[in-house]
Image (cartoon, rainbow, N blue to C red; front, side, top):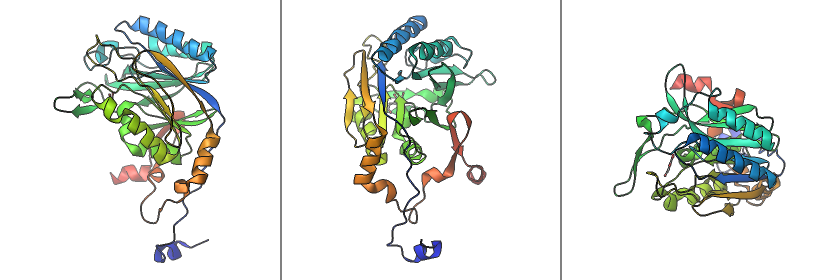
Length: 320
Ligand SMILES: O=C(O)CCC(=O)C(=O)O
């Protein structure tokens, strides 16, 4: 064992990074690329039918898209916003998970926080008994302006979340983000280094940034971290103001596309096997070749707390 001082004075010797634990068991993942309308009740009923269908086809974990209960657009969020867990969407999702006997990553909904009146873009996650086991509020708001392409300012209406989310399931730990969150590699890297086997992103890219980056970002997050990555979009509705890209996709730990689709409504499936992560990390051992004597381990700045929430350590908060 090298002492810290020895390591410091022999910089060419790599510092073996902290152990890589991958705990999990195989499962079938389903992404529901749902056709979303302006009718919330209809969306909830339709989501229920699709979640039950995925379960009938053997899925153990089912994912719904970003903003699955409302059209995507800042003008819609205040009208569709609900409190969690009292709102009708949360209740509907809990009973879907229970009746389908699956873990459900219930896409996202506009969430109204009672105490402040703030609105968030929020994912809720349920276990097969229908219990709410985690919530993730979109951390990075989608504010972009591409001349001739798309301008979108979520921050006009939404507030940003302030924690990362790692969900404990009986198949292993899974990190969660929402759409634009995928552009921030730290989230996936922290999840991988904290033992998550996959990142799941309900998302709704568009016809400008979708063809440029949707698959690329998923494959990048997967190959960087040698983990599974899945992104679940709504189906495209040409009559809506926002044209979702669709192309829900599941990527393996080698950056390989395991399942994908076009823009219409679909359910895609893939077998997730944590052993594949172990194999990739053994064959190309970047995971354990990190040089934490040259740069910092970003995962060391955060700690996992209750309800899947992951937050900056208190001493780091004090430094801000
Ligand atoms: O990052 C992008 O290009 C799209 C992001 C997005 O649509 C969203 O965050 O809802």
